[in-house]
Image (cartoon, rainbow, N blue to C red; front, side, top):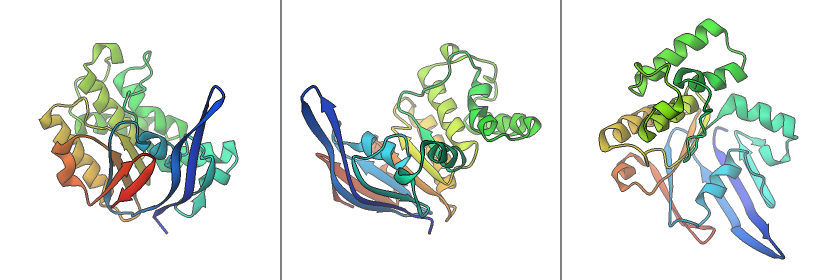
Length: 224
């Protein structure tokens, strides 16, 4: 009931007159209450797959059931509503809004979900502390290092306690200490049996956190 089921997923892109097939008939189940890692060489389709799982991209064919909801059969409006309530995404490129402070960036999911402003302030302060940025609340992204921006992006993804958390290289910009601190946060989030956490990574420093590791190559999941 709380798992993610991927059935016969294919994804193709047009490049001029050519069709490039990136994902080839993927069947996979992601289990709740666990940390699932997706590993493999660059360009094998990992980011495309997790973007489809999170409802950001649509597959060319196949079905994605997220907590029993077939998200690629939803209307655009229903998909957006489902994502804002249930899904958090940590982007490899951070995707922070440059005109907003660290605290304001972190607060975005709560604002979208129309949470009470006083609760937004309280929860955003708590999240800043959890990622070690309590003294950077009023800083704009350009005033933060790459690692600090990554921690803001992680706090933003966690603040609304999403049932599905999808992470693309969450520790790539972090030093060893900060990376392990963040992984402890993600591990704590994954302990809840109603939640799924999927992490794409090349960082072998954090492999010990994986409950399940799936290996991908050439648009296919080869082993788990």
